[in-house]
Image 1 (cartoon, rainbow, N blue to C red):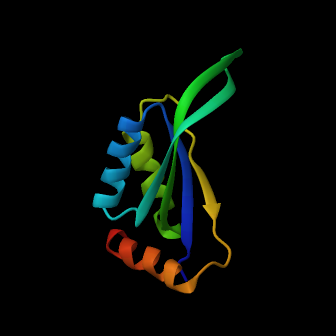
Image 2: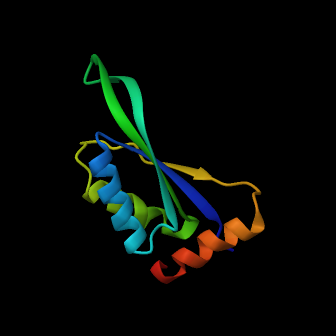
Image 3: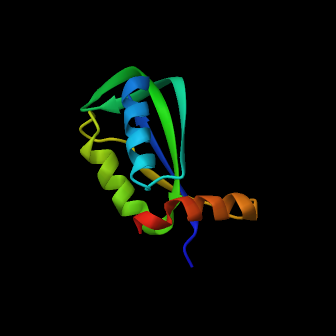
Length: 108
């Protein structure tokens, strides 16, 4: 049976995250996206320590759509290597889980 899945990703701006989130939701790949602005990331990139202000996006989808969601994120992303992490859900409210699955069933 298919299960809800959260996909964690980051964007360099709120505008880019909102565009991506709307696209994923309109395509039926996401029941919802949460966008959290004003994150500071410190990371190593090509041997140097970098600092960037980023926006976190959490995509609420179904496990069977993870590859389609990842492909859509990569296709529209400005980063060379965007963060795309699949977070399995365990438990949770049954009605909420059903809502995620219902809203993404057309994209299967």
